Amino acid sequence: MPEHARHSPPAFDVEQIRQDFPILHQQVNGHPLVYLDNAATTQKPEAVIQAIVDYYRQDNSNVHRGAHALAERATEKFEAARGKVAGLINAPDNRQIIWTRGTTEGINLVAASWGRSQLQAGDRILVSAMEHHSNIVPWQMIASEMGATVEAIPVDASGTLNMAALAEMLDERVRMVACGHVSNALGSINPVADIVRMAHAVGALCLIDGAQAISHWPVDVQALDCDFYVFSAHKLFGPTGLGVLYGKAELLESMPPYQGGGEMIESVSFAGTTYNQLPYKFEAGTPDIAGVIGLGAAVDYLQRIDRVAAAAHEQALLAYAEARAKATPGMRLVGTAAHKTAVMSFLLEGAHPHDVGMLLDQQGVAVRTGNHCAQPIMDQFGIPGTVRASFSIYNTFAEVDRLFEALAKVREFL
Image (cartoon, rainbow, N blue to C red; front, side):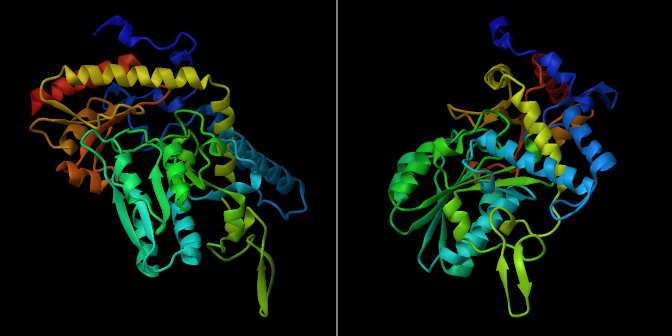
């Protein structure tokens, strides 16, 4: 492998980054941990862990209506995090940031609330053929209820979305186009700005699943002009069980509440209830306060990093890994789109992905195996699943070498 293929931008010090993530400094099955499962969840820097601990040690209280110091401190940090997330994605107003339990709940919220109030029999919803199940099943559920249909935008053998087919599918009956910014199973980066523009041209809305994009480069929802953008905190170096739904204000204002309960109301009586303003209309019940504060710390951490250099580092890792894969007999890459993020899905000839994953784990290398909640695209490719190695800002070229050293032993064993 040419030495230049192993170089990241001089401005990016991966060893310094690694010092911020305590979980990386351990052994698994007698080997130093190589964590390559970042598309499933990213690890957490010490700053995020400490922010959550500090909340529980010093500020633990419910937010908003409390008339005491702990509630005031918790509320201040909680709402400050909302502003940080709004700034991260360039949302025009903090009110457009809705806390959810994750990307999945964000999509379900839009499908149920917008879909139930807007869809009619005969309407069409388009989703890409490589979507995560979370961006397929909610649309199927609401379509079945409302008499609409869900149709798949074709994907070619490289894992590239067929934009010509999308253009042919779009007509005035299409009400929603739902598409991932990045495929979690293949790493393909979709041209979402073009997809939004094409959807709007026929009067349709566009929801972007940003779960796999948000940690890799800056996202600007105003530049994209998307109607909804959803992502999860745990893929952005934050805690699990928390997500973000961004929506255009006029759409969120027009949508009915998703759940009923405390916080989402303005007044309640047995004669009737009036609902709260944005964003609280969609935030029934006690929220994940510690998680929100932790996400705020994750955004702070990310904003201190040179994100251009970080993205270049990840791309260099991917290029190096894929070059090594192409030079490895019996190794097949799955997902070879021209534009990809740092995900390498592959198969080893004669080996089931699950067996490969287990044998890698015995050598301290953590990867993901299976269909990655993207069964339709795996069915299209005629495979049960893949082994997926996914890279983040703290991974190194030495760890890529460790992966291939471990794969060589897997091939010998099998």
